[in-house]
Image (cartoon, rainbow, N blue to C red; front, side):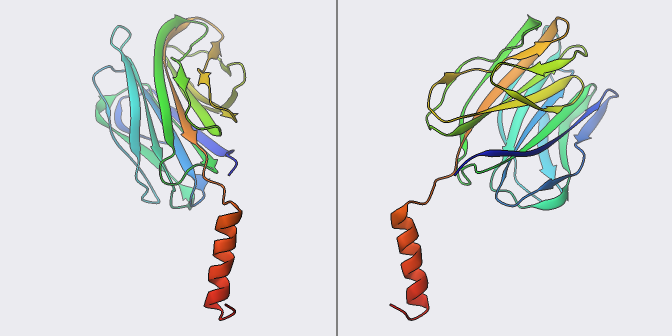
Length: 226
């Protein structure tokens, strides 16, 4: 099954609070949601993520830079229940400022075990970069997020497409068709400190001739033809 990008939304809030919600979006049943949450703290964490449709979110990883007091986390929800006006909300372990959230939706991902690989990165320059991942499936989507210490114009790295902007943060992706070693880069208008995450998700299985034939036979038996 081919993976495709569907849509994305993002939000940024500088004042301290314990939650942040992304704008409502049309999310379709069976799809995958990838969420990046950034915050100006190395001690506060994301306690949970929930949405209007009641989907279950799983944390992938986080990266903290205690020197600059910044954190980014990645969560995802697989095989989701759809909602035409779905609102995704992150709840924090304490009050925190300069909060960001991006939510990107993908179709065609594995509905039972989509997560493959992930890695992180930290630094200070105009070219944020993640660590390397080595994928295990041919068809995957690589999704990356970046959170910045200061506002900068963010553009996608080579071979990536920028998807969602949240002022101090952004997401991008790349769909690949062969196993290999990959990373993700961004480009900034001016140097600043940054934290990054890359996560890869596998495509869903494609039904082969045997599966199609078996399904057809089952339908014929149910109809009394066989």
